[in-house]
Length: 307
Image 1 (cartoon, rainbow, N blue to C red):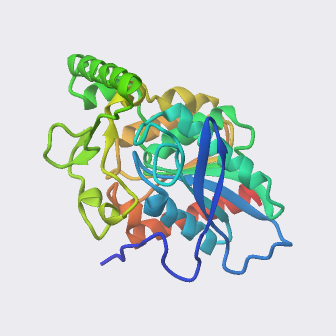
Image 2 (cartoon, rainbow, N blue to C red):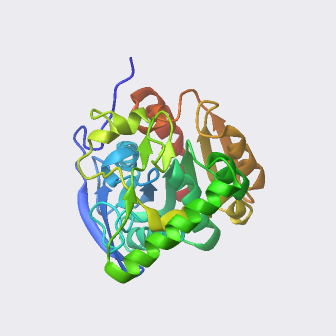
């Protein structure tokens, strides 16, 4: 049976850092290789996790695995989540998240022990990384694991049709008006396996399990209703053809929408590799076998491209 990993296992303990981004600031955990020598230079990456996740979940797990393999890694709380700033808590904004990834790369590039900077995105952050890589020259390389690659047609299908999409947009606009007038943030559950009012209704064992992601104290299973339009319009497929940085994609037939991963791979404009792994979506979040194999490949990619 595969070991369930956590973000703070082993000898490598992260340092907490913060830096400006947009209208506020980002708090992140910095993972340095165990034998870190400040006089040397290392490949470095910013790491983001799934929809509404925090740095103590899969982002921190992968950041720790990168450090064990000789890569400096920065697991971030996007603005509005976890310890990071932002008044609109639990507010999903793909454009702002891409800005946060770029801010993280600027922080890494300012360090004298960094040789190059790249992005590692798990699940939703795989798509967010494409937004950042399409715009930011500091993205020297990209890696994605079990990525969620949305586009309008997919979002419409996921939400069961155009009529529901329009209702959710209206809900979001109303919630935005309430926030503007009163400061109140209307929220619903982000994940649930049966509750139809949740933003994402599906088998959600990683988030429902208190021994896995659901037990991370800083994570909140909440989605700000006023973010519906931003989330519905999330479209990393539209960004893929603008990504020229060397990109490694790791996906599986058991991960989210494998045909979308194939579509992204076909559109990428730079050097690229698509590795088909074994495992279900949540296996790539914290299960030792799936994470370990992915981390081996990702770290090798970054050492080759950013070293």
